[in-house]
Amino acid sequence: MHQLIQNGGVFDVIVIGGGIMGIAIAAVEAERGRRVLLLEREEHPVGASVQNFGLLWCLGQPAHLWKRALRTRARWLEFAPQAGFHASPNGSIHLAHSELDAAVLKEFSERAPEGFQGHWLQAEEIPARCTAVRRAGLVGGLWSPHETTVDGREALPRLLEWLQRERGVEVRFDAAVSRVEAPEVVSAAGTFRGDRIYVCTGAELRILFPDVYRASGITKTKLQMWRTRPQPGGWRLGPSLCAGLTYLHYAAFADCRSLPALRAEYERTHAEHLAHGIHVLLAQNALGEAIVGDTHHYAQTHDPFLHDSLDRLIADYLNTFASVPDPRVAQRWMGVYARIPGKTDLIAHPQPGVTIINAMGGAGMTLSFGLAEEFVPE
Image (tube, rainbow, N blue to C red):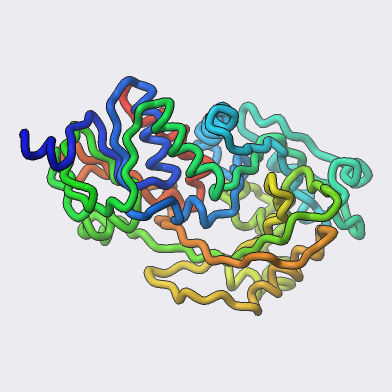
């Protein structure tokens, strides 16, 4: 034991992975009085939680995850002023530029989960809330106050610094884990002992527990998106925007009886968009940059390339419902996240004292803190 302590250390909890799920677990465990070590393989966060859109999209979650999403949102808004990052509760407008769009949105609002505070907007009410919306053919829209903008590039490093400074979490970067044999964790930063070990990163999961990885059915989703320069003159979008393709994508709308008619129309008019898993969101971060995307391709291994043709499809659809003053692109990037078809997460226990939490299906920012609060013992 003396040699082990010299080489590494002994902790109540060891978290492997410095993405948002690992951060959420570390935060809740530390709140509950445990000594926590977080191991991150990179020198700073660069994974799915940074590559994402930067949105907490509560409304899109299936009904059984609604309260988890709201609780996660509340924690983001609580942590933001404490850790010193921006979290903007700017809400969203789900736009209807056809009666088919409107039918899905109105049906959803009639059967929305408890606590949903949105409501239908008539077409003439929308420009006062958001000048970016295209008025031609506008039927109306569903206003939701629950969606929130958080930029992972800013938020994750600030959260990690805050956890170290205020919650006593020990964070080690450049600490790739090569072996877990509970209670020991062997990493590039040393060998550590923990009563409870969490694996919250896909890269280590595939190496540490390949049998679990293969049996889980995990696939990887490749996203393509971009952001503009800061918009001129301090222009602000206000609520994040989306339109009909988004209603085909998110599980919240899946049970709407009016959805098949909308899908049939989009299969007729936007077959290429559907083939590439495109649904289009428009958001704006605290820097004033507009964020636009994205595509969804599913496979175990993806090529690392971005495709102009897909950007054009995204831009073409965006232009049917919204515009920004300066649409020039400053950055394009590829995001990747893990998902399991038909499931909202992977939770497994490959060894006594070891828990895998992974494959949040692109909803880690929206669901992480709520899941951690439910899962971590008091």
